[in-house]
Image 1 (cartoon, rainbow, N blue to C red):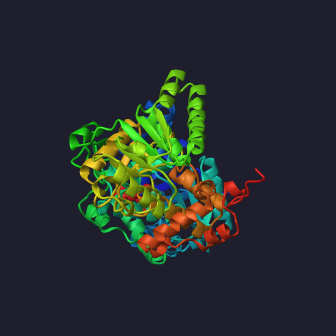
Image 2 (image 1 turned 180 degrees about the vertical axis):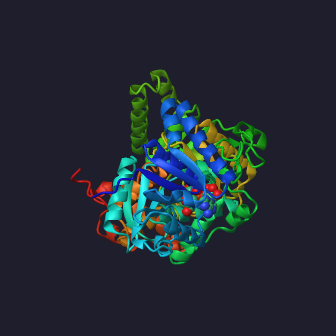
Image 3 (image 1 turned 45 degrees about the vertical axis):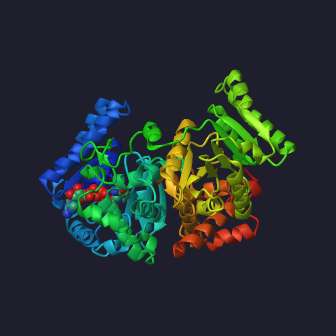
Length: 596
Ligand SMILES: NC(=O)c1ccc[n+]([C@@H]2O[C@H](COP(=O)([O-])OP(=O)(O)OC[C@H]3O[C@@H](n4cnc5c(N)ncnc54)[C@H](O)[C@@H]3O)[C@@H](O)[C@H]2O)c1
């Protein structure tokens, strides 16, 4: 018969524990909430009441329900209070010896049939279980942060966890309104194994001054639709916890150096900069525990002051090319009020681009987002040409021709001869080094990357790629132009993948490797990232949309440039591409799209 869970214990009321208490109490289950001292109990109580008060203020919880919820929680110091609970969830800091000590103690205190669960993110549940005399009743129940919000629970069974314990815990998750994925005991399980290499890489970008914290976070939010950027997420997780997770994953997960914690993390932990919980991490918060970011010495001055930084005035813009990106970029500039000179390779191409821009603008009219007058004005601002000579008097040129270095270099050499002095020359390349293009001109200080995302009229992000020769004035101009287009321009160095692709594709590649290793299924991995981390799409959904061939090409570039062994493309990805399974566009990728 399935176990009844009428009362549970939670050990440790920090970032996770306090949230886990709330999850149980909300669902009518009595909780004995245990901490190490009266002061720690008080902190846990404040976190719980703060969270439930916010839920009441937002109208998500009735006052009476909050009171009932709080009355179900019995705060106690010391594990002895757990003698009669049916299940204990341990959420103390991520140290194996500490957890083993606590489990040995729980084994002594709790009734023999009680299930003992750990919320560990990366430690071996098996190693924790052997500290007890009942390893078959020990299991991992890994909640996600914030526990009351995130739907996912990873249920981790060891080789000795009894099947009935697994089944009972799965049923309990359903009762809590959570979605569970049940997996074996491996470092990082699904979500953290895919997440932490990415987080560590983002920290290394910040540490190496490749981009600012705001730009790294904005890039991942706006470029990938993530609920928060990686550095803000590190602050939410807690840098001490993140350090321990990375360190364990490095040691348990095959010493992949992408999991070796970036030195800055350890320094910040030592300095007490633990993230939200201590009031300061990568960002500064109103007070410890507050989610509200306040300005500090790293906060950039407002974008409007970019002009003061020497940004040049831009009124007339040339766009070279006639593909998807060029077409979108022409529309974006014309809609924002710039005079545009479109240069294509002939009248036929220009006519095609004109039609495409018109169709897209018309969609805006139909949806009520653009008036007919504004549409006509935007179209009227575009001049169509088939010769680069017409770019002699523009203030900015955006190149969006085929992704081939020789073609781009020849074009930039011509632009160098034709364009007036002081013009900003921008390339939209997504994979070629901008410096190669810049050096085809006699004015590399004026050359910058403007990496728009597809579809350009919709995507709010532009990566502004600064080479080692780009002048501050050129970068400021590029950034001011992005702002005038209503886009967020993030500045980064001239390295393969810039910010977004460099952080995104290795994660997607890791998901393929996880599938290839048969650790989990594509459906569960997609679920884990959507429900555990709030991603808009799971990795396999996204790979099928982007195209497996495109993804493989980007991953290869990253691997070739950065020589990071962990970036080597997953063999399964290569095989699928060879087999012609390219994703949605070919009808089949990781999933079969012909039958849907
Ligand atoms: N932070 C996250 O985003 C996250 C997400 C999922 C899982 N986890 C895992 O949850 C666990 C807890 O992490 P956290 O971020 O909540 O840590 P935390 O540092 O915020 O909280 C840990 C709490 O445990 C208490 N504690 C320490 N020793 C204790 C003892 N002997 N008895 C009772 N309480 C004790 C501490 O006082 C502290 O309040 C870790 O295993 C972590 O890997 C963390």
